[in-house]
Image 1: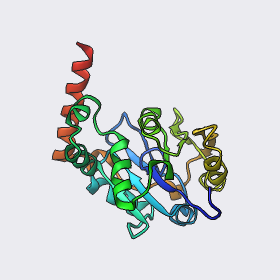
Image 2 (image 1 turned 90 degrees about the vertical axis):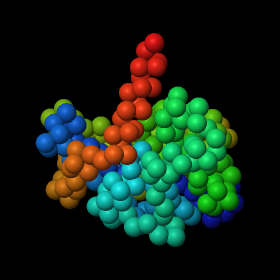
Image 3 (image 1 turned 30 degrees about the horizontal axis):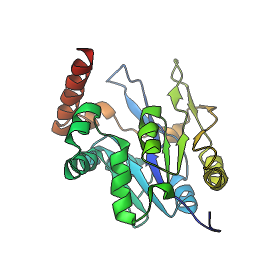
Image 4 (image 1 turned 45 degrees about the vertical axis):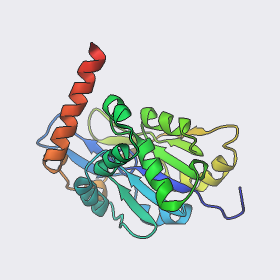
Length: 225
């Protein structure tokens, strides 16, 4: 790795930037912000950042605003509509129908926008099912983020974002021997600053998401046959 080289980051929205609490109670469902000063930390660690989400762009823009992430020349947003469009444009309709909106579509979007190779990218996500296809596609490094809410809703399992970003250059340099890092979890008591006030039950109730839920249901039925 060249001196001063900074990778391009694909950062998952849910599980890395925010986490949902009270998922079983639509009346109190809310998103918590996981990291303070995230915009500055990301800008210092990467040459370009793509916030990637399976949520619609309309939802994601409001969530990014609450997390103080401003879309600009070095930070872009890739939403569900963008992933869907990429699958259609690249003629991957069969994969789309079988697997849904995969994060590899975000990788190809980001490659086209930056002109970079897959090896120049690092993905930060809390789900192995999102990391595996990107690793298969040749992404440079996968960072698995811990993300969980305690049963009593008072604490969260998350990670030290600044520490992980400081370690990223070494992890990236050593990617020839280890291409996935599972970031250690830390438990934190939920603090007032983390409460976004965003109800995901209301925010996500629109036609695009209804269509996605229907498609997901059809895929589940197909697998069960």
